[in-house]
Amino acid sequence: MSTVVEKINMQTRYRGTTDIDPVSVGFKVDQDGLIFYKNSLLYFPPKERGVFRLLLQAWPGTVSKEDFAHGVWAGHMSDESLARCITQLRRMLSHLGTIQIDSLYGRGYRAIILPDQANPPKISPPSVHSRMLETARIQPALAEACNYAQQLLAHCSLETLTQAESILIKVISQAPGYMAAKLTLAQCMADKINYGVEVEQSLIDDGLALLESMHLAAPQTPGLQSQIAHLLDSKWHFDVARLRHQQALRMSSNDALTYFHYGQHLLAINAPLEAVDAFDTARELNPFSPNISVMLARASSLASGDPVSAVAQARSTYTSHPESPQAYMYLLSTLALMDPQPETAYAARQLAVTRSSWAGASGMISYALARCGDRTGALEIIAAQSKENAGTRVMHGAALIALGLVDEAMARVKEAASLGCGSLPILLNALEYAPLKQHPEYPSVHEKVFFYLPKKQKQKQKLN
Figure 1 (cartoon, rainbow, N blue to C red):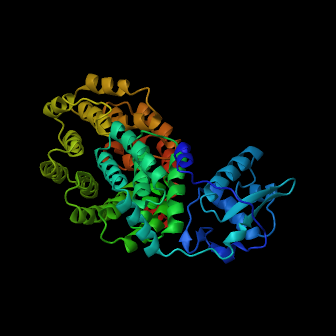
Figure 2 (cartoon, rainbow, N blue to C red; figure 1 turned 180 degrees about the horizontal axis):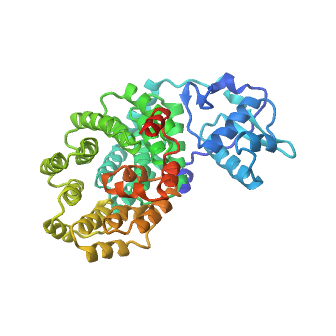
Figure 3 (cartoon, rainbow, N blue to C red; figure 1 turned 135 degrees about the vertical axis):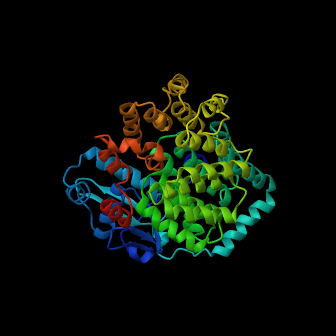
């Protein structure tokens, strides 16, 4: 996705000075090592955050390789790993346009502030929103294009995700200040990761950089904090994501998407009871969204554990959204889980998987077939996607478990865990994956996927 960043021309390089204290322009490191800029939390991956923390704390001095090795890598650091980290950090900081990292041969690295940032001009949120609205008024075709991209994302197929991304890149290249288009592009990035269309963490980093640049210009933009949190959840950084979700809920208490993202966060960290409340609020704010209704039904099923209630709610959801493939797929998979019958397998066999199909369809179809006795049909669908990426292959984990191929399911889960991003946390918390928790390799996978749980949730899991 680096090509997206290049196309919208967001990266700029400057020369800086050591005369300006980073604190004076708004940088702050708190007692937990989190980094803030102008009182807003900045997201960095753990290694990059540790390196930047040392650079800020050492200002105006330099940080040696030995200091980085001891303070960030626990003594086990190669020159290549430090170089990669510095390169990534420079790329992320370039979007701020405030600070850069200089290398001093033989001495290490230091942080320097750009000279024109000592007294940066302040941009008031109203003026930013006025420019955003002005863009929409002057170029209504761009606003219509953005709306169309949002409609494409609602279908969430490989075809529509690709179309939406292409449209949004063009819109942003023509209107760099169009906030709604940037938010929608970030949503597209998250959807591509969570549905296994893309599996590179760098895609999420590009999305976060895009949104952080928005945050500096217009921190009060509706939906911004929630979208940042959603991308962080896609990278399994649940602790930092929780802080963003809390900010989002305070700022956008009447936004359905904010509560929907928060509900997904809660499902990912295995808090289904709280997720029910979040999805229920989202549905009250937007009763016409099948995605919200399906996720509410899923959370309710996990929270109650009652098969009769789960089937009833799945039927009710499909009745409310009869045109939704998501609602129909969820009904079939729920029937397969709670009451497997040949009729469900027959219904699943009638569904074809193409580029225009809902992106989550194949995994649900293979599971319904596996649970309802069509072993051959399930294996055919699984084999048809055997050459896809790890994010797609793991979608068939539930089917493999139902077929008794638990070792194969675990192999796919381990492969997906190595990606460090995607929908795996929600999958692992699903009822269909419960047998996998008895596998001897599950604890190590769980530790990797849920390493960045919020502290309270970690303590709760230890007690359980």
